[in-house]
Length: 599
Ligand SMILES: [Zn+2]
Image 1 (cartoon, rainbow, N blue to C red):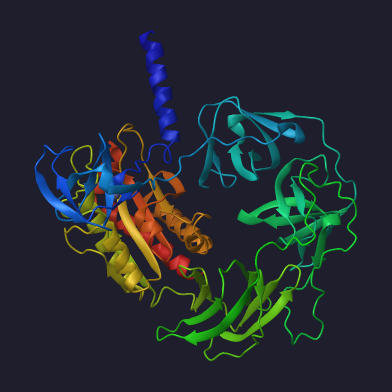
Image 2 (image 1 turned 120 degrees about the vertical axis):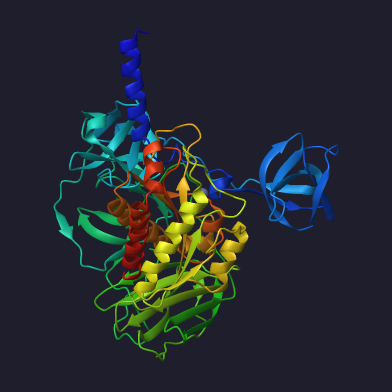
């Protein structure tokens, strides 16, 4: 092509690369904690300097040791070890599990014909965000030519259906809009429901739609016993809040609506528990391809609760402990007027446990009741004297749920700061040679000063240029049951020197019940810190992202990993070298933590 054309193409390429700051460019290799791990299965296994028995022995590992796998070649694994930097072991004696984070798959668009309005993407590799603006985090990436149904519009942005119940926002200037034949919606007037109104699904499988009518697309399916907060009613349809703060419409025929939320055996007028209709009407909105519902749709075995108690800690926290003979499945809501926490325990039998008045100042009363018999739900309500911070934690066997209550303030909170890398592990190396480990440590020390000044109790995993394994870093925080864990890193891209900006990671997948119990806290911590960081440092906002990093996966408290800026980018590296910039990064993290602990 001509020089002119080539230049234009080059500019377009870099513009696209800049726009794509984040997910695709961020290195999630070993250096930043996403690891393949292996467990040694032979009793004592030799570690060699290369992938073969012809290489010299440089050490050994014992049975049961978990090691990080760096590379695999000819049935040999290169592993990372604390004393010798790395070496090779034969594959026969190492059970390797792939713990890499799942890659961002392109979303499947929903059934476009069901939407009155659709958008077609006009640019390649477009970000879909969690809200209507570039300051919201990325939730997916979509491509030129793909079509999506529009749920609603706001400020020039479109809320689109990504399929499988997922939704996201896309900027109006990146799409063309097409209006289709409008599906038939209910013409009846809308009525607002009283605050606290919720509904319980009684049809076995019921569709949730993007609008109040069967002509609208199905955005998810819900099942008997599922409970949702109601926003409003339109005709015979209810607009409800779905998991992940999404919204959708459910037809009234298959739900029981109630406006009470906190029954107890002492309530003079307890609400009628939502029971299945003995004579359900023929369901027009039930998937015809599904088998007919079983007579008893309560398939989970019912577990007896064995204890509910509230204890006081020296730290001033008040700890509610709920014990069950089986794995606990629960939902937790924070409600106001009056201020209270409501915990619903699925498939549970109250087993004679009673309301009680605890000692302490934050919790006024704990109420325990068999809230529903079909399905079996126990409701525990903590009536609060004041607004508190709360954190749910599930034990490893899932049989104990702990909810810790604390004053909404950073004062007295235990915060572990983890400066990434150190010692023989320099981390990423900048484009002109800046070592990541040095930036991480200096920023961690600045952050400690700022947090000390507001009364937090700060513990550093390292305060010198020394090496710690990921396991040791996690252990520092878990041993002292810290309130938050903050890992400080700088990013690097092997293949894109134009990638720049700041990202904050957390991890709380639904597949891990312990981490998922803290989804709200982990995500809020990441979002709050990311917002403050970007406004303090003035860097490009790469958003809040989830990744299976060892330090995020293994920490038992809300934890984040901050990728401050890109060492592989000339502009960002210059910032990382600048002590004023480090101070801004530390200030942004501190501001985010202060805000998080005030909620
Ligand atoms: Zn790093």
